[in-house]
Length: 152
Length: 260
Image (cartoon, rainbow over the protein chains, first blue to last red):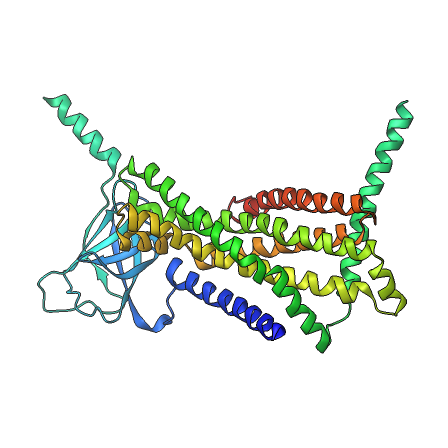
């Protein structure tokens, strides 16, 4: 009986370890069980991304609908090119959708916010979002304010 | 006078090298033979002793450390109106540093000292010598299952520590101090990467497990077979293990996160 209890408790420990690792993967690091099939790709050109990084959230009305997969420089326009994966259920982004880079709180992480326009046509895999708004850079804002103060 | 001190220095260095060599040989020799069906039973027995019996202390300390992190993080981040980042702070601190290090220190105190004392007493009462008389290799019979059990048990305890700590932080930050639950988990999931943070923490746990169990078994196996010898060996196990955990933690952190 004592031996049975011993074996049961050791087995429980091993199972608890596996379950905890799974919970860490899903709940804490936010990995998803579904693979690469459930999304399509969009890109957008920004004047300034202000340190937007890969894996940043892409949101629509504050709900996460995708993530940033690459940030690079477009060699022709010399603007920042942001590639995003959007969940394939979100198929109602119109072709005049607006993308802007926002900050969660004063020191929070950067994310991309989308807002849908009024066109009939929808964005599909590989499309480029035309209407973009760059991140607010604090230093530029302060510089603007100081300039205005100087004029008065 | 000068020659004498040089001689003592050489003696000390040689002594240390001898001990490291002997410890390595002991480990290799004990792991030479694969465990038979009886070996699995002994492994289960040892997993119970070093693993299951350490769960309670791990659970309690993880919960309190997570709660303290939640509280400290909240008061610190509130000054910058960024208290929703507390989840990210709690999770990264735990997964990268605190869970492997604190769990390994507790493991050294709880399981390592017990292993040393057990082996030391076996040696003092000549149980190890009588095993050899029967033609049973004590390294294979006694040391190997304890080593393997220690190496398996600590990473499991660290994973449990991570999870309980994160929920401890959730309890304080979200349930008591009113941080938004979605912000707590959302910031955490955006910041914690499974391969970079969780797996690197587990690699740390594995390294610490080898260091602690190995030190404990070597100290017990090589202790002076007197009651004072056992007590000194047990003390050395805890002191050496703790110092090695902290030293190796710096090296591993520098390699994994420091960009060295």
